[in-house]
Length: 347
Image 1: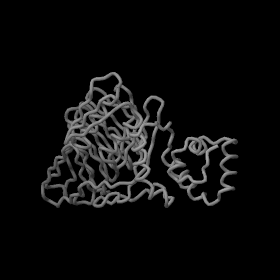
Image 2 (image 1 turned 120 degrees about the horizontal axis):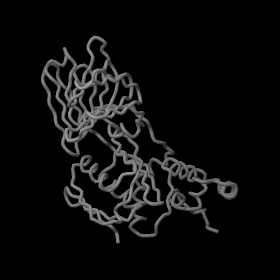
Image 3 (image 1 turned 60 degrees about the vertical axis):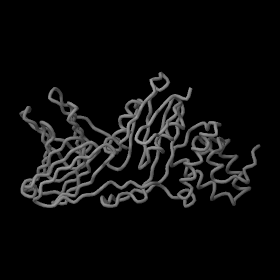
């Protein structure tokens, strides 16, 4: 039997038997660990912190034996030890757009074949914030890797995603109209006498006071409108009647078809909170998103072994940390050279 009396928090987290007790407890495991704690009560804090870490990240992976993978795990654990030692959970903070997420949490869930690995650490994500002056025309483009937060003269907040364009006319204070190409999240100040309207390609989205997301890039036929709060009215010159959307409803709109469904805000609206989200995505799809998110170019090796699907959630993480997370549970290798990332198969 293993002697756990000298184990640290990191040792407990890496121990398969301990992880099994935390993630899939049964009477036998409960009996062993509860009895062990009675013999070593001085380890209660270490056990509690290790359990807290594992439960908060959903740790469910067979640890590989390679030096490289162990070093990655150690790096993740080391980065989180300050949080673990204090027994802290992920905190939900009020968004301050000029000073976003000083103590944001990050977690990653990767599924490759039958392996699953998740981790939670803290980092900073501070997109630029610009106050748009009243009665002055404003046009702004965001390039790949750039996000922008605007505070309009009426107090409304707009979060502009990468590779997007917004135009605020000089008469905005009298007629609250803006023009969007790309993706943005709007949090609109209510004004019953002066509705807020977003124009995107052939459609217009009108609101009184609400929050919603629009994703309508010029090179795509479809525009997607997702409502977080309030009511949104969507109309077009091609339609006789407007479509009303309520909270948690989403409209996929094109000239040929209009589909209204419900949606998961944690997925669709993740980007505005610094969360990079993938669900059943191929490496090609992930590469395209990484190029937009970080402003880099991804070169993929043409290899059948790279055809797997990934589900992942990264919060406020650097490019290297995202790639390390993917590499940890997959058969890929990556190399970063200036603004290019090369992804190849290990074998």
